Structure formats: structure tokens, C-alpha cells
Length: 145
Image 1 (tube, one colour):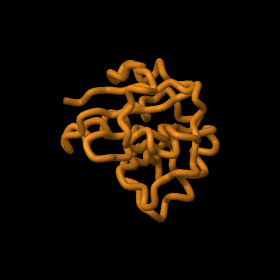
Image 2: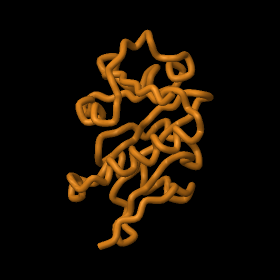
Image 3: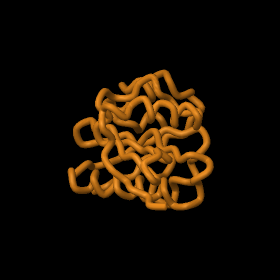
Image 4: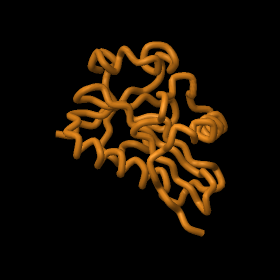
């Protein structure tokens, strides 16, 4: 079985939505065309997704999900590392994420919890931050530069 990670295509949005719903992640605010989203496929079947929304010099890491049958194989890690490397190349200064369940997972990538008040306005204005995620969700950031 061969795992391939590639940029998402707009036509794959339905598959992405299905996988995110299975993982109980938000789909209401997915960007059109899925720019900066990566898909992991094994033998052509979608098994993972991760995205990075860019807002000027900051980004929001989101929608990191792997099919339960494929978890524990490093798939999410490969996608997160690739997205963070892309952020570095694009000179993004900081990447943020919002999570209710996976805070400890993201520690390994240099993310640390921060107060919601420390989040830049661009991220605060996202639907994910301002309403879709509960106020009890953990906000984390990773400074790139």
C-alpha cells in the first residue's frame, strides 16, 4: 500500500467534508477550493487531511484528521510538518490552532497554549475562533520566525 500526500483539489471537497465529519471536526467554514490543504491517500482512498489558512503573516492550522483505521502511522505528522515547512517558506511569522481534544499532540511541533486575548485580530475574526469552536477550546501558537 502506497501513501501519497498532495495538495487538495476543489473537486475533492466532498471527500474532505466526509472525513472531517467522521472525526467530529468543523466543516461549515472550509475555504472554497481548499487552498493550502493537504490530502493523504492510500491506494487512491482518502485517509487524512490537514489545512493551513493564511491571513497575511499569520496562519491557522486546522482540519487535521486521519481515518481511525490509519491512525498511529505518522500520517497526520507528515501533513503537519509539510504545512509548517510551507509556512516557513512563505515567511509566515506565527501559526495558531484551536482544539478541544488534541492539545498534547501538537506540543511535539512546538505549539504552546496561549490566552485567547493574545491571538491576532486576523485569527480572531475567523468563524472558527469567533463562534464555531467553543470558548473552552485551547488556543495554541507556534512562532515560525
